[in-house]
Each structure stands twice: as C-alpha cells, then as structure tokens.
Amino acid sequence: MSNESIRETVRQEYAKAALRVTDQGGSCCASAAPAGNPITSNLYADGETAAVPAEAIAASLGCGNPTALAELAPGETVLDLGSGGGIDVLLSAKRVGPTGRAYGLDMTDEMLALARENQRKAGATNVEFLKGEIEQIPLPSSSVDVIISNCVINLSADKDRVLAEAFRVLKPGGRLAVSDVVVRGEIPAAIRRSVELWIGCVAGALEEREYRDKLARAGFEAIDLEPTRIYRVADAREFLEGAGLDVDAIAPQVDDKFMSAFVRARKPAR
Image 1 (cartoon, rainbow, N blue to C red):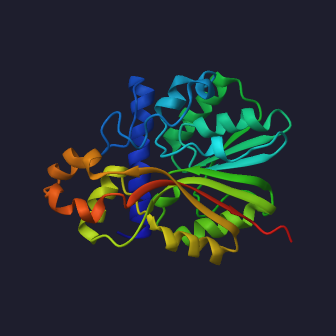
Image 2 (image 1 turned 180 degrees about the vertical axis):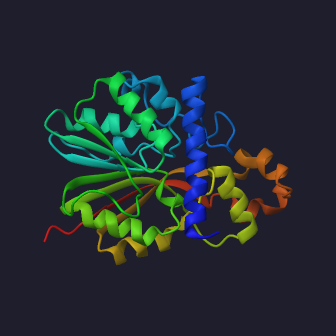
C-alpha cells in the first residue's frame, strides 16, 4: 500500500469508530479486535475517568495510558498526536491546570467532532482540537513541553517524519511520552501482518531497536522503552484461526514478541 492508501484506510476506520460511538453510544474497539480485548481494555483507573464523558472513554482505541506516566506539571503545554475522541487530551488538561494548555491533533473529521463535543461536556476551557496529520503538525517550532500519543504512531507510514515533527515542535528539554505497539525480534511477514490486524486496523509496529534508532536519528536523547503489556497468541486465537493460520504452529514465532510499550525520549536542552 502507498503512504496515502494507508493514511486513507486509517482515516476511514477511525471515522467508523467515531460514528459507532456517536450513533449508537457504544464501545468502539478497533474493528478487528474483540470486545474486552487485552489491548484496549482496563487502561484507565476509575478515579481518572470519573469526570470524563462516557463517549470519550468509549472512543478510546489506545494501547496504554500515556497521561499516567508523562509526569505533566501545572502550566505545561501538551500535545496528543492522534487524539481520537479526546480522552487523553481531557485527562492532560486536568493535570496541566488552568495555566496550562492541551492540544489534540487528529485528521478525522468524525473524531474531531466527537472530541469537541466531549470537550464541551467536560467544560474544558484549556483544550483545543486541531485538524491535521501527525506527519505535519500545525504548530510552531519549540511550542510544546510534552508530546503524548496512544497507539497512533504505529499507524503512520512515515514514522521518521512523525518523529522529526515531534522533535521540531518540542521546546528544548521537552519530553516525548507515548504508548505504542512494539515488536521484539524477527517475525515472518504473513504472521506479523495477521497479528497486527488483530492489534488494530492497519498497524505497522516498529521493532524495538528500530524504534530506538529512529528516535536517535530524529535528535532525541534519554531514550527509554518500557513494556507495559505483552500479547500472547492465546489472546488472538479466534481471530488468527479465522484468518486461516495454524495457531499452535505459529505460537513459538509470535508469543511474547508483540507488546504495548511506554516510549520516553527528550529533546536536548541546549
């Protein structure tokens, strides 16, 4: 698939997800992932989401909770890449307080409409949702203290561009703190594709070392990658069998190799 084809596929899938929440008021897990799956479930503590609209929670397609680990401080400016229904933006807005600001960036009109309605319901005045692509962030250079993202960078066909843009808009000393899907080791292409489809839509997860290398090439330092959830073949058995794969045969090649991870890095202060 071309970069544009991948982008359009992602746009269509996430538009459908937003409409499922808007039209039906139901959960919108990734289209390929079963309800209650180990990827999108139980990411947020009840105390965190108590004041967040139910639609923002239902529209969450993430694989982690970057706001819990980003160490946001009052007065900071935070940007969420691929903000979806807005849950991480709204949680960040509470952490940075009235003197701070939380931006959400998304390319899908339906998600933006849902996020803005969730902002209205939450009464969040220090929030702004922007339309755009994460490969071309519509903010000035050196304007953001912290960048977060929740299982979105893996969906981009041009991850080098995403990381270069993130580096550009961060202030000197600014922090990148994202949740993403990461692969450990080599996996046969056909098997990898099937597992990625189970994880979410059109995932294109980076191998752990490749992720670190790309961050370093973009200019980041203090790079750290911490696994938060390890995915097992047993979790995806039904989906993989439906795709015609012999699950027992591929298990040794897949088990423990796909994970959600919290990825940290910093833009040099100099």
